[in-house]
Image (cartoon, rainbow, N blue to C red; front, top):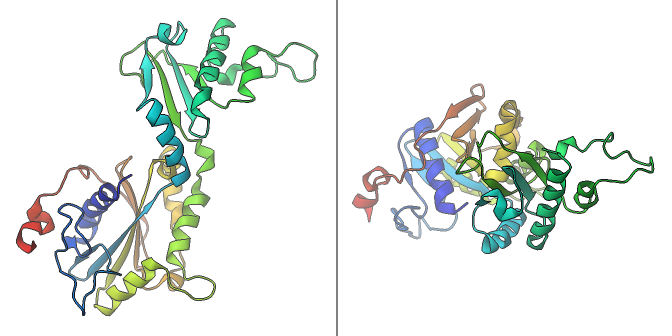
Amino acid sequence: MRREDSEQFAFWTCRRLFGPIFPYDRCFACEAMHIPPSREDPHNGRYDFAGEGVAVEVVSIVNSSTLRNFSSWNKRNPGPIEGEPAKFGLTLPWMISVPARTPTGQLDTVLEAVRSMERVGMRSTYECSRNRCPAGSGKRTCAFCQVARAVPFDAYVGDEGLVATRQGDVVVLVTENLASHGLSDLMYEISSLLRPSADGQRTDVLRKLDMAERQGKSRRVVCFVPDLYFALRLNVYPNTWKKLGTFRWDAIRPVTDVVVASPNFHRAVVFTDAAPTRQISVRNAKKVPAQRTLGCRSRR
């Protein structure tokens, strides 16, 4: 997730919530400083957007280790691996999900495991239960189980064709295990940026909003933009969005509002010390704002 993309989504989200805002730090669209740095108003330490009575700092939450794994996969196979079943030595339209932590060289091993499943009539990794491969009974373990213990993946026959570009194709997706990035991981990332350290040191986020408080901004907002791997679990379990708002507002001052916005699922949840938690749908937030909307043309 590029910085420009997260800032653009945060811009549209917070503009809807708090009214007109403009880049106060370097503009994500034109790369200029709309308000040039000066001795009284230096560049370093600025928050991202300012409006009348409102300051917004945008924080991208990215799983860097997963991104590195995806990078190695994408160098070999950019995007989903898709094609007719015969291309993979299969006859059925399988949907195969491989976690990014799996080395790229083990894709052939995964495909051989799926071929073994197909030969014995299995249509999903969830079908290989104890009655097929009884543990400790002395019966022979099926070929799929022998491989799957070493190479993690999920697979099922996608007859409905919801994932494939063309119905009937096999699709291999490189994904991340939902369980590895749960609500507690996201809450930890957010809390670590909103609270001073044990020795009282202010985080970069807090220092920027300290500046906003000195400037008289009554709404001091932190907008967190999680990448797909953090936001995916929230989308699968929608009720967890509201559980993010367990903030002790006195401990995170001068923050007055926290927004968690997901570009992947066009959704945001808003927390404040003065109103109940609410969720909003954020549509058309991937469009590039007009220069006049950001104030680029008049301030460059």
